[in-house]
Length: 438
Image 1 (cartoon, rainbow, N blue to C red):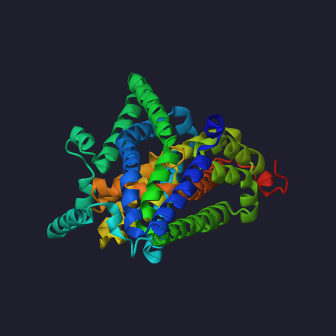
Image 2 (tube, rainbow, N blue to C red; image 1 turned 120 degrees about the vertical axis):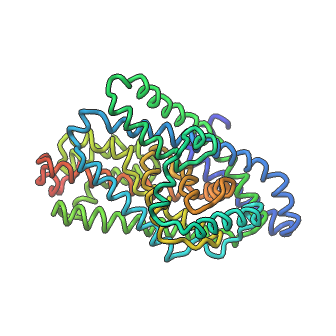
Image 3 (cartoon, rainbow, N blue to C red; image 1 turned 180 degrees about the horizontal axis):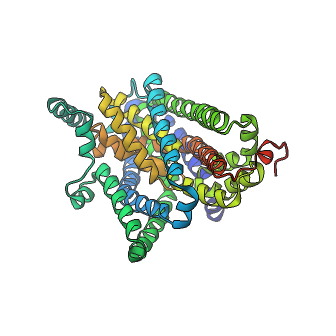
């Protein structure tokens, strides 16, 4: 029985844990009554959920630093830079910034965090006081966008790492990666170290993700045992906001702006040509796992020359995380609405900037984007403890959200690959327009 369980895909085990947690939680809440059922859920399930939350929290800083530095260094590969050029990276950054802005707009309209019971986040009063205090200080200082931008630069990188200043860590990691690129061969040992370190952190992340079914079971049993079915309404609105924003990004940004306007090629043929990649992306929730299929679709179905597909798409799997950027923006709005924080224009801009930078370092593995959300939540004054609990609350449902995020990421990767190929005269438009799909 154990061998069957271990052989099962992680996402299936997570869904089983989620289903069992729902049954247990609702059984406690409605079978034993809200008070008694809630006490049992808090005593027997919450500690295990808290342990899983602490493991997630442990990953955030080293995962961001190692994957971001490694990703920046990968951009410095001379062969890739010759193939791509600055405009390719600029196009990736532009689509990512547009994506997070779209997420902020959709999240603001749908209001997924409104009416949320903040007592689920533990000591809500003291946490709210902390958030309010930070916002009052910011208002008293009359911070403009310039001050917010300056605040991302850490005066002491060591302190940024020890204090968990995720925004400062992101900035320092980007600068450190650029320094490695600038030194070239002299910095190769350092580059190799961070490449290996990022692989190690991904492996550690997967170790902890193996515990996800049990953590999910404990968390959802505690949440539903304490609060009942009413709490699921907010998750439905969060999922609606994400799916709507991702669909808009795919249809209007990739389809309307890139394929129809820039490439001037048939939109239906583009989506028909990437169908296999979208299927793998949605089912695996992993950009890395989808990469071979993405390259095949770009080459054989859309006419992208092999050298372009082989350089643009792997880089896109590293830095072009539009679905993740949308998600990070929506989570920030979700948290702000949940906690009653009124976001200023400067804070919206900082969320967009931070989510764009953070998504660059998002590993191409399931749920990686959710683990990086703490850095974005810091921008609006959410405490570290609150951010971790918000992430823990979302995590049991993250698989369904991650599937859509990954499909968006992969669509953007292939759309940009087609654009770069056309700019460099390496797109076979007859193949793109062909009906046959391999």
